[in-house]
Length: 78
Image (tube, rainbow, N blue to C red; front, side, top):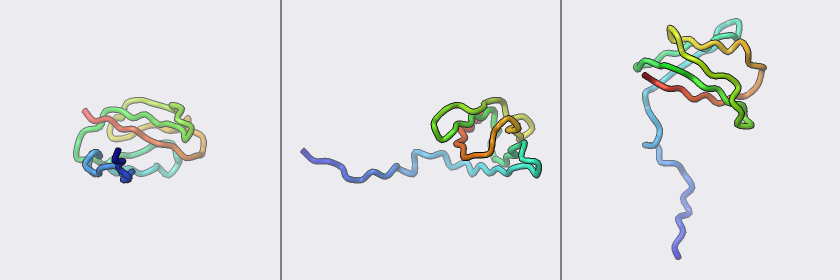
């Protein structure tokens, strides 16, 4: 039996829409810049628990309810 020892992820599996975001000065909002319209976001803790989710409105997403920490974000486009 032959095993594939390559554990890398194929880069073509990722969407390359070049989405950028920045944190507001008061740490309550994410501001997005994207060539495609974004509709919603889900933010997960490092433990994999859903921390918050909601719609992206006017290229912004409210994160005021999040505590300081490390998170993962899933963004959906329209």
